[in-house]
Image (cartoon, rainbow, N blue to C red):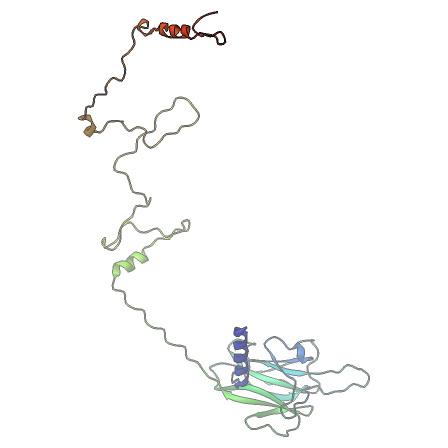
Length: 302
């Protein structure tokens, strides 16, 4: 919201300031609402703020009114060309050399003029000091206002234009390139080979100064100090899989070899099964003294 408000204020200030840019193109339209893009219609007179119709013919038999309005632009037209001067001549007069005329309306492709017409001359920027910067139409004045030049009248309306100096903006000078002291860096950049099949440029193998850059291998991998072990040969199965530790000889750390620890025997091995037999006589005697008819004795067979 704040951004739009600031933009509206800026546009109001720009519109209030005089636009001294030279006019680059002219058009004639039947309806000023259908003026071409980037063109400004002149549909009101400068002195009385009345309709600035240049046709000014009323038809008794037709209800529609034929109108012609002049439009101008400061951005359209031939590049680097501006309107140098404007004249009004009769429609049957030949157009002078170097002048252009408007024969058709831009919106309806109808006949542009009835009795008199506007012609103008285009010139390239830099070849002329002055150009047309403003056009006004007057319906009451008999001569051009101060600061304006009279081109002529069409059906009682004066065509006046303003001449102003063209402002030439000189482009800034291009600063000279800074000298580079490191010649080896320049040579290295110039010798970079770019292959159309590769995504990145391939660096050169050798440089003049070995202290500035590190010569990398093209594989961008560091080679191991010893060759990798060969994978074991598998005679059966469908998958040939090996791990990183395969092929490495298993050996005990030499520091552990001097530490000899004897593990004591936890039990005596039983060689004769007869020595492990037990007759349960003591248990039978105890049960005989406490024998009851209600409970079965597990040590006697009934």
